[in-house]
Length: 89
Image (cartoon, rainbow, N blue to C red; front, side, top):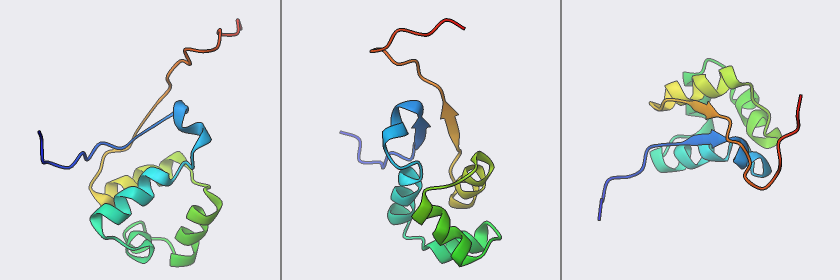
């Protein structure tokens, strides 16, 4: 059994029913980093950072900044759903 923590956080379209920022919250908890510390590292106000998490509203560029500040690499991928037939464009 591998005792090293899993440091991979990937947001996929399958996560759409979940909060978008949930993976970041998990990393904050695991790394013992506060919203205030993350806000300072991302060069934004503590209130602005808090509102992003409260409203679950964040741009991809903001996610990249947060990941960088936490020492992670942000990746986003599209995964085709297996249960639905694709619409023809």
